[in-house]
Length: 253
Image 1: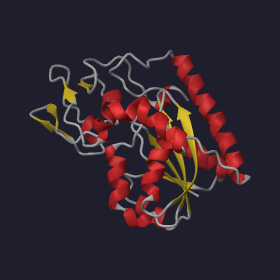
Image 2 (image 1 turned 120 degrees about the vertical axis):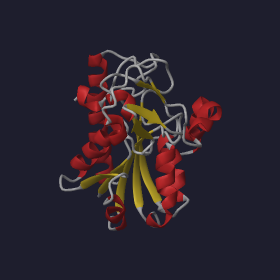
Image 3 (image 1 turned 60 degrees about the vertical axis):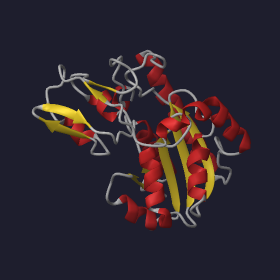
């Protein structure tokens, strides 16, 4: 088994590592940003793929990775983990259908409610202990899912027509267009920014640069919220106007 993930604030990374560790303590886990991930995928027959849903669909950076490496997925067995702040519908199904189109066999799916990563919106903010309980519950759910997979009865959350309808009418029909292209909406407050460059290092899209001592955003944001949740001056926003809470997995484990 090989774990593959894309993660903004660490939820999906944590889920992939936890799943693989419980399945086989010697299994390896790689980010899609890791240059070694393609080679590892080539040499593995069973993949566990974890990612954060955005508006009940797949982030643009991950869709591009799947499509740009379409030859990798033929005859691969894939178990998909979708992490979310509240609701997905068919998160695992969205990625599953994309991979199936390139020849993969999707053997199961798991949906995990995790601490919300959208740091500049109040809607899904929860108390610290509530978020810690979400992570503990996710761990228990992962362990049970691993047990069932080993018994040949993998969980199939997010897979099938009823889940697909829930995802479509729950969010994707209204908001799915937001992830079809990369976003130009990332905002950096030049009064707060000190030009430390941390956001430049964190961005998976190389979408941020530092010019004249200030960070500057381009138009290739994949909305992962990594920079927003780790900026030491809380100078970056995307959907909201100010940072309400910076959420990273390290706060909750």
